[in-house]
Length: 175
Image (cartoon, rainbow, N blue to C red; front, side):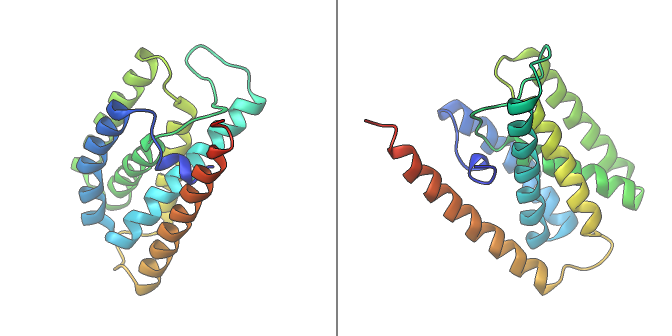
């Protein structure tokens, strides 16, 4: 579920806004890290984001706008991971442009998280941390390697399997 949640959405508007954000952030992250590492960062954001959300939903009582999810979907944890990678790039390389852009996205994500009902702020926080930590491990100052591409293909394959399993599991609740 922590992997399939990033690929499933709760409606047309939800997927539209997530697609717009991915369209803005994925090419930038790919330029900074390479395509394989971008996929790894996206996946790390999803896994850590939805793991934190699930943990919070099970063990942490709701606090104002912080409530974990028993059921949560959307690409926003992965999107937050891409933002984390952009900030990590700024810190690693000294790029004030990357840091400034990342900080603008962080501010916008925080405002949305506090203003709109139903936003999974734990998923955003975990996704950001997952992307930031993965980006640190995948040093952008070094060239992308073939094993990064292999790991990215593995991430995509696991994502496909996870979505199929989640959809098949969901069929049992239809009737």
